[in-house]
Amino acid sequence: MQARIYQLPKHANQSGKANTDKWVLEFEPEGKRELEPLMGWTASRDTQTQVRLFFPTKEDAVRHCEREGYMYSVEPAHRRTVKNKWYGDNFAYGRLLMWTH
Image (tube, rainbow, N blue to C red):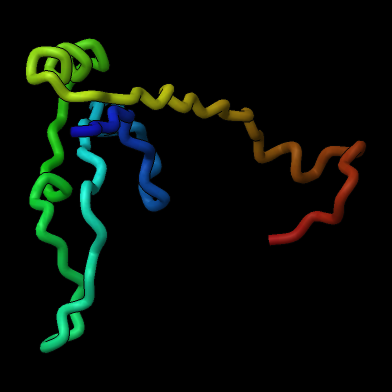
C-alpha cells in the first residue's frame, strides 16, 4: 500500500494557524473509480481511500508506516512568508499605485 504524508494547509477562510501543525497520512487509491449505472454516482471498492490518520509530528507518521510495512512518501511542509503591512502605507508619498478600497 502506498501512503502519502503531508501537513495540513491553512484554509482560505481561516485567519489564524489553528490545526495546521498536524500531519496527515492518507492512502493512495489502488483501483480506479467507476460510475454506478443505477444512480450515476462515482464508486470505488477501495475503502482505504476513506481513511485519514492524524499525527502530531512527521516522525510519528513515518514510524507508523514503517511499523505497519506501508510504502510512503513525505511531502515537505510549506511555510508561508508574511509581509508586514501598515495602514499608513496607503497614504505614503512614494506610493506607486493609486489608492483604492
